[in-house]
Length: 198
Image 1 (cartoon, rainbow, N blue to C red):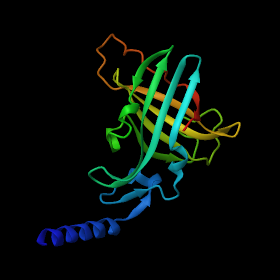
Image 2: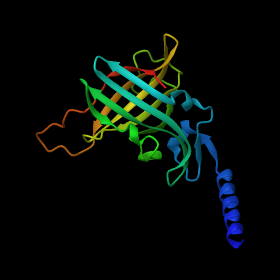
Image 3: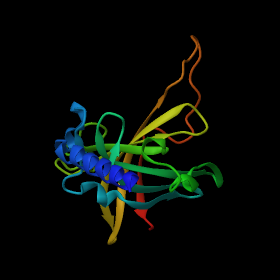
Image 4: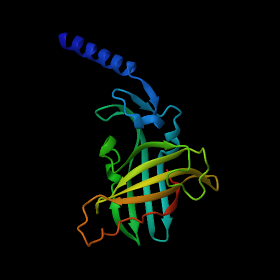
């Protein structure tokens, strides 16, 4: 009985602490105030949830995304888009982390992000419209020391939900003088169109 009362008190106290935290739009997360909940107030991230597929010949990129609400990063709470991906180049599967989709949380995923933009800066797709909601996600290469930033724009193709994406990449390891970094696994600084398949 004593343990049950203790658990109830802890739950009530925790709920009160969270409820008293300021709630701010995730669009203003950059201020990083401790204890704040950066929330997707208008559920704009929901339009990006699902499984998306880009194909060109026998090369494809499949991305599976979900929204995790109120993820605690040790300093503040945030609504976070997370996911996993599969990359096939010339018929050969190079990266596949899709099996981890339900096994990981938050920043453990190979795809994650929380940045929502409503301008065509930075890295717009060629058909970017000022004021539209765009989502920025980081992808981490499992083969080489590269990270990719994908900026997603919601689109519709023949009545089917789609995402237009522009990506940039960065090699995050030291490069000895006189050498160049390796080629990234996925193409960098290109634009692709992904159709929703699930």
